[in-house]
Length: 126
Image (cartoon, rainbow, N blue to C red; front, top):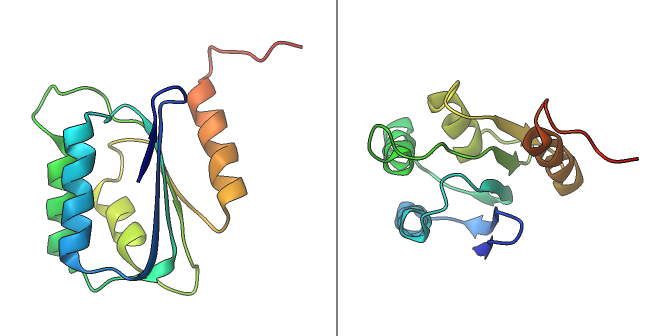
């Protein structure tokens, strides 16, 4: 996990089979880092996991925090479209809570985050 305070961005890359304990540990580190408003790129395109919907829901609950906590930043998952996994279920159980999208490439994910973080009131110079 890489956290960039300058860019207000968290990047997580997962490869291979990821156990529930690893996901729980990463979730705890995210909570402890106090970066809920940061944008996140989570690349799970080369990872697999066996989490149940209930386990994914617990991860989402941990990341939500207490009612009234700071707003949560957008999440861009880079996925393997041939597999339905953690990212798909996470997007489903958190639908409507924050901007969240699934992408096939890191380039697409970064471009979407840039557009999302600009917001409708900001304009690029030039």
